[in-house]
Image (cartoon, rainbow, N blue to C red):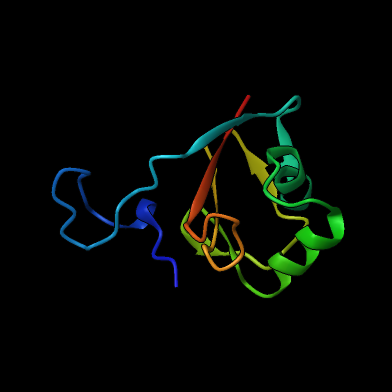
Length: 101
């Protein structure tokens, strides 16, 4: 399972924890001050539909700021980091997105 980088003390050069922060983190700009998690996953292109967002959130494959999040309506704000477990990504690797405004 994914071990979120935001909750670990590490450096890219010598990751003591064994976890490497994904180099492919993408900034995703939102229009308003807040966006709900399901909507954000669609905006980021992480899922194809709202139904898929609902499913991956419900089974615990989405992390918000390092914690598993099963609340599709969770409010995200600038600076929040959303990660998808590699189990569901096309690349098979953890994908992370940062909320920007």
